[in-house]
Length: 316
Ligand SMILES: [Zn+2]
Image 1 (cartoon, rainbow, N blue to C red):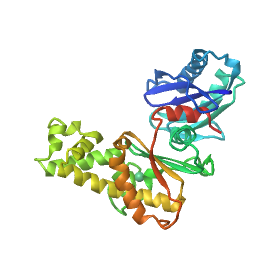
Image 2: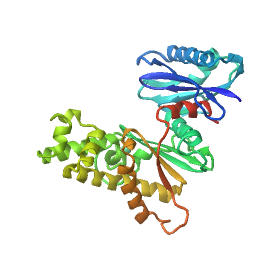
Image 3: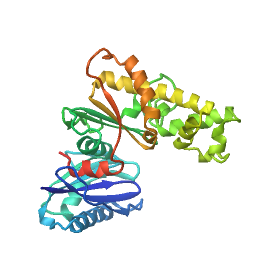
Image 4: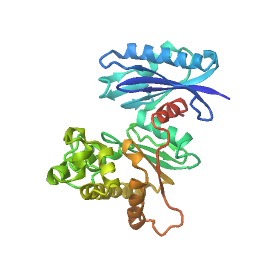
């Protein structure tokens, strides 16, 4: 079997892992990124971790086929530059050329972390065996990845798959990107938490107050789903409305791509059927191809943080 190293460069941690060509993750090591350090220091850590992961897996460095990196920003695959990474404070950092200096002779591949994670989930997680898949990650914003006919679609500028930023309501809620009414302003985890807090203020008798210890600051996605499980009416109303927003965006994506599968990730996806079942019901009613025999499946992401490492290691 051939072996690769995957590196996930995050705003909080740098992780590296040894990955087999069968998309198995053999080990995983991490160090803190320490924001504010220059790119050279971070690249040296990446190189060191890569070699440690190989050694930990009892591999000679010479026998590693290649190294792949996922970065939280715009990854220009022509130049090997991270053009912009807000989390790291990077502008035009030549990450790949620098890592090539540290790891001479090793092929290095590179992509943004959302694409790397989508690719990992496609190869080894819920997308296994499919030909086309969209990854939709519900977090602070909404992350995306597009796999079409077995490869990552990146667009002319490597920035495709920004599913958070199409409008579901013209002149709607302000979004961090500067537009108003973007999908992520309604359907991200952040939006769900904001919608929960607003409903709690309007419903002082909701059980949600008890579930967060009476402190709005402690409300998280899980609080809402706990409320729903306990039949709290306010929680049920918030979730019902949230699912309508989320479904609206997913139906749009399905109508554009008709993928085999949409893989939903992020903490909220742990709610499983509580989320997926009502979503599927709306999709079944609204999907343009609803009369077709073959239908887009919804699935929960299976690999968590490992997806980014596996995907990075096996980037093409
Ligand atoms: Zn936006």
